[in-house]
Length: 154
Image 1 (tube, rainbow, N blue to C red):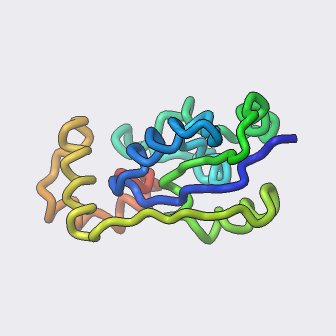
Image 2 (image 1 turned 30 degrees about the vertical axis):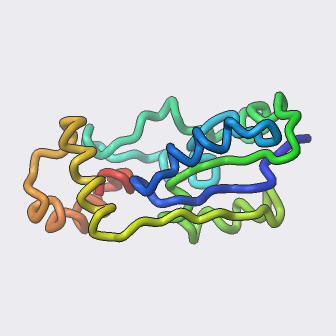
Image 3 (image 1 turned 90 degrees about the vertical axis):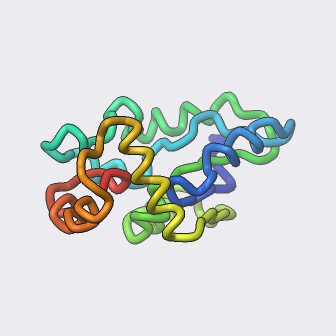
């Protein structure tokens, strides 16, 4: 069975999508799907009731056989997965990653925190998923987390 031998556990709005496009161009790297959310899929079984706080459930892979099947076509030497959620939910993700993949290589991509915050805020403004000022949104973080908003929408 083929499985990832490296993970990119980036932080959202830090360049993970660009890195995905760069790496997938390499002839010895296979990354068949960006952001499977597989290792934290349980978190999405009871999503937020607020529309702006939910992630599209069709993007989340929770079935182990479905996760395995996306890597079957890989013939390359290096097989990877890139997900922004694993850095955020590392306490849940790490034990599951170790159980399923053993000890894969991990690449962590981060960004200056204030720039990342502003980029994330602007992302949700563009998507019409944020209607509060930046300060108001920051004041709502604890409530949004308690209401099970997706980590990108908190």
